[in-house]
Image (cartoon, rainbow, N blue to C red):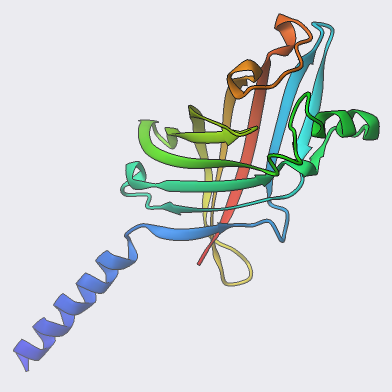
Length: 191
């Protein structure tokens, strides 16, 4: 009887330990609780803001071992929206995003470095306009827990900057316009 009880406790402990390991999440696109936004300076006079409306992604995360996390995001570049139809048409063309030739941009993480309580640097490869370069996304965990519908969610926000010339963007409107700042908000539902 004691042996059976001990075995049940050991198996239960192993199960709970497994439950605390990394979990896989799907980015909540259906409920639109995720955003990929950007801003770029317009000729040194003002900021132009935009978003990519069509993207998807997954990540794995374990609060006890955040350094083991992984992230994969796919963005449909044709979904760029800056709230101005003519500008969006130009952005989709060969001067900028070249969406016919490169319909997707992707990010695949390679490593995660914890930088503080709830913060980390996520390093990975960004493929944009047919060019793949290493980038670092500064990430902050924004929350984790049960949702009202019986699911479990974890959320993050992140930021990074890229230089357009590094990704073979042809249009050059001067030095103030060469840096694009990305702001990401990802809420994932545990699978």
